[in-house]
Image 1 (cartoon, rainbow, N blue to C red):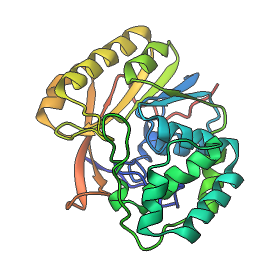
Image 2: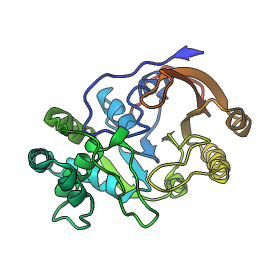
Image 3: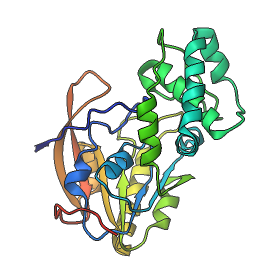
Length: 274
């Protein structure tokens, strides 16, 4: 079992289930000879940020099922300065009542404005958990007296999004885009969790995920999947290489937890190159 530590840098916005502390695995497991990066379950985008910090400029295709988080990434990429200005305006007006007002607003004039509102809501919510009904309606409430704004982190996030295309879709659709020479990074919801944002991720979804990984392997794409160290998950992915690591936890009572890395390639300590 190996110990994984992460990069302790300020992030553009808070996000439950993020991989800030886990992302350094990419530096150790990045395979040689890849042409593109594909990241379903994109979330806050920690995996892509670390890849860019390593100097890897390969094209990236990223996706998530939540349109609001994908619009946030697109808005930061499009105009980080406008995102910061709008977020500072939210900061100055912050109160429980104002938080609800922003939460319940459906339409925004621009992607950067929508991004600032989403960042404000995530940074002001309890443990940055996105709470939505199945119809997409937010149910978050304000849990902080003040809300942070990190301009340097937002600009860094915008830079990390270079050469990146966004999609709002199920992971299976992203898998269908994969071809030989691609590297697919998978951070799916863990077993025995409720998924996030009002959308569950069941055992049937995990079975669907494993079948998708077998198809990636058949096509010649390389993949790396992170998951909880669960016997059922181990058995499900037994056809592939499985390594146990211990990682720091951002949520929950335990300070460290055992997780697994599943991959279909030999670790060669390489650096991706076009």
